[in-house]
Amino acid sequence: FVVYSKEGEHLLTIVPKQQNDSTSTIESIQLFSKNYKTDKGVGMSSTFKEIMDNYHVNKVESTFTTAVLFVDELDATIAIDKKELGIKDFGVQKVTLEQIPDLAKIKTFTIWFD
Image (cartoon, rainbow, N blue to C red):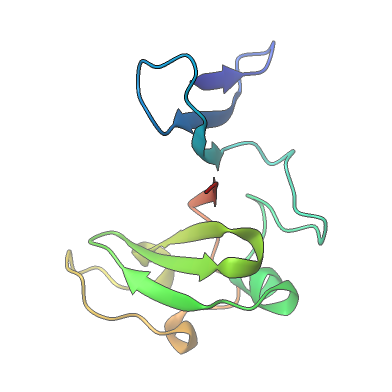
């Protein structure tokens, strides 16, 4: 389910656990709007430094195009584009927290539900 503002801005996407089931519970919510922030002020307009200053990153996984930060405290994953890291290779080479610049911007912010 894709949610837009009255002005047409993509606010968020809600993903059900079971597609095409009206009684399904929510699997995840992907945030797109800068209006949504955690209680510590972290949101789509935040930098990597702001994430690290406010939350413990439990692990980092690499995809072809992003470094995905797992923040267990929020039940969230935060993806940062590898271009923000200066990595141009299209591959899944390991990325460490030390490789991510303080000013790197968030590409996606997803909250997960059990």
